[in-house]
Length: 371
Ligand code: OSB
Ligand code: MG
Image 1 (tube, protein in one colour):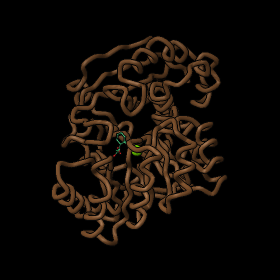
Image 2 (cartoon, rainbow, N blue to C red; image 1 turned 120 degrees about the vertical axis):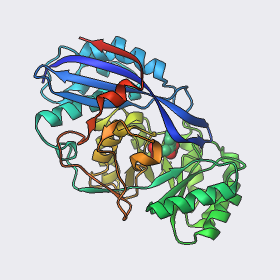
Image 3 (cartoon, rainbow, N blue to C red; image 1 turned 90 degrees about the vertical axis):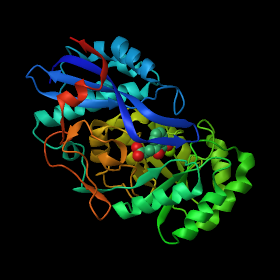
Image 4 (cartoon, rainbow, N blue to C red; image 1 turned 45 degrees about the vertical axis):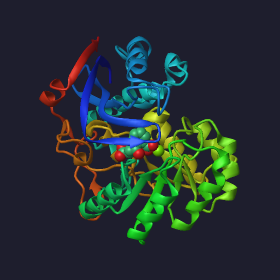
């Protein structure tokens, strides 16, 4: 393939309901869509998941736009590539430190394009083995426990069989206690988004009695040693999210016992290839893994779904249906939840859904085409 042009679209999309974590609240999400076009006219789509501000990671919409426009696009446009893996051999791409969300948006677009050119579904091109993926739901921090339990009940009715609850100091043990008493048998896990320190170990240990599948990212994103100490005190398995920004860090974390599970987000680690590398590393270490989300539109969701078909995905994923996030997704068909808490993996080429141009146009704040 030879990339004729790369287009960036800055979109503003409104969530159906605000989503609150320990690091902040999102109601209107900005996101960058990346569209690459081959000389044959075939196109591919990717999504950049950086936030409105540097809260989940240091990357923002602004840094990603800058890094793609000034450093990534010039290396990709006009280049002949046999396949998307070649992106990682480009000297100047290897030279970019960090900025994984920017890299991921472009790399994903190349994978979608490549699979479309082969007329194959992306999941098959990357070695996926399932035609349905496990769909769980992540529920944010609420104003009251009453409100939270109502939402849990609504989501269970919709068919979600695994619930993840966001926690933070002041919204933890008591809340989980009440939810667990209301639903003694559901698959439940929690995510602290780095809100605690090792001094909170005794408090976190109180969560052990609620039969949680895992506790995600309890401590600071840079604190691998802290997590390995905490892991020795907790019975609940530790899953890392923010800390695992690369296959190297995944290796370090597993080596020192900082976690026994990794939440793989392609945006956070740089795209499809680094996600597969972390997946394979977990498999080699007999550790389970799953795919996390960043409230993606239908485009990014397509890439998450493809990754969730890999063989060592052993837990429910944070990949919910389009209508959990948006009134109207920007793709057709939207992503739909089956009654058994799964989402079908499309057999159509690429990510298997089509971007509806008019829906992108009406949400676009800014567009840039690099030829
Ligand atoms: O920590 O997993 C997280 C959303 C935005 C930022 C961070 C996280 C999340 C989620 C939602 O938990 C997952 C999803 O449904 O996309
Ligand atoms: Mg998380």
